[in-house]
Length: 116
Image (tube, rainbow, N blue to C red):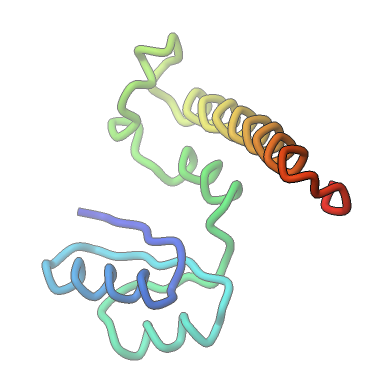
């Protein structure tokens, strides 16, 4: 199985080690060149220096295989990379709005005005 792990810290390293030993193909993405070098030297994985957030979510539609886009057809979209990109972008917008509203409510509830 092809697996992408975002983060090469202690948890990412441990997960990569376990999955690599089980014979899976592992790609690790991290911003820290030092952590990437540590993993590259000790595990049989493919390390990538980069960002695994919003860009990674959007890039999934470009690098993923269309047959792996489970549920694309059920949402009214075709099973194509462009359709998956639209689904991913919609998810990002929803997550950003939900995060902003939730953070605002928590900070107002705690009466932390300097953070807003």
